[in-house]
Image 1 (cartoon, helix red, strand yellow):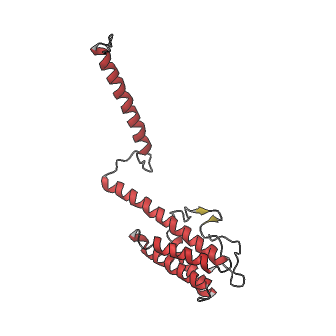
Image 2 (cartoon, one colour):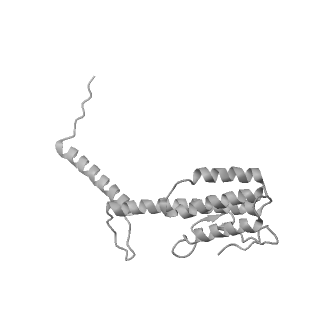
Image 3 (cartoon, rainbow, N blue to C red):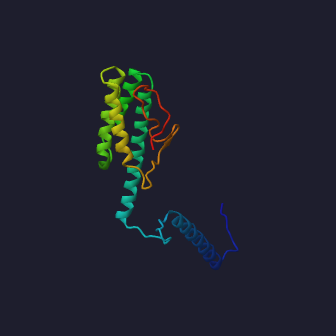
Length: 181
């Protein structure tokens, strides 16, 4: 069985191919316009391979920093609640497994997070004092706050508001309700 298509000559085939190529170029142009970085002056920038690598590394850096802030938030919530050694130990084990490696620029913050997690775990079983645990949490918060965006604000928001929800009052270990700036 053969099917013959008649009525198409070489000119109409060339016209269809030209139309398809035009549509393809228009789609590629729209995609390029959407993903091309723009300078502060509003001009499109052509990025070289190194610059693309830097942009990718910055995204990974921000993702890890946001993750560290989230873990610090969880540790703060655990510290603000009544001591729960089981829940705290499971959380600490997960933090230690997850943050043994990462971006080299965040090595200090990762190590401080692990140290703080261990201190919160010790506090939950009564092996560390309230003041010691509070001090390590405040050190962690300060270290992560130094890594804030250019405008000084954290890019992370949680269900509690902005990063690390509450200052801790020595007389009452429950949240005071005043978010960190």
